[in-house]
Length: 172
Image (cartoon, rainbow, N blue to C red; front, side, top):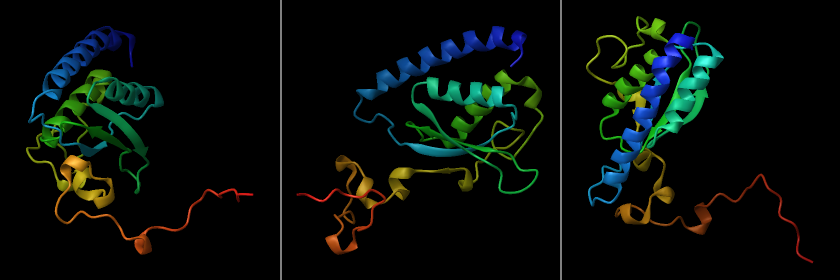
C-alpha cells in the first residue's frame, strides 16, 4: 500500500469498522437478524504479501466478516483465493462487491483485473462456485440446536469416527 493510498484508506476503514459494528449490533437483537453465514471464495487481484496482509487484516477487523484462509492457485495464471466468512450472507453478490471495493482502495492499480465476479468488471451474477452456506453443507452434526431439521439426528455410535490423531493415556 502506498503512503498516499494509506492516507485515504485508513479513515475509510475506521468508518467501515464502526458502521459494520453498529449495524451488526442493531440486528443482533432482532428476531429475524439475517444470521445466514456464508463462506466466499474471493479471487485476489493483489499479489504482494504486504497488500494481502492489509486486505485480510481489514476483512477480519470488520465486524461480521472473517478472513479464514488463503488458497494457492491450482493452475498457472490463476489467482490466489481468499476464504471469507460473513455472518450476514443473504446477499453474497453484494459481499463480493464490497470486498472488491476494499481491495481496490488498498491497491487502486488492480481495478482493471477481472476474474469474473461482481465488483471485478461488469458482472451481475455470482456463480455458485464462489460461495456456500456452511449450515447447509457442513453436516448434520454441526447444526445449531435452534436450526435442527427433521433429517438431523445424532449419529449412531457405529457410524462415529473411531480413530483420532491423539493418543489417550492409559489409566492406571
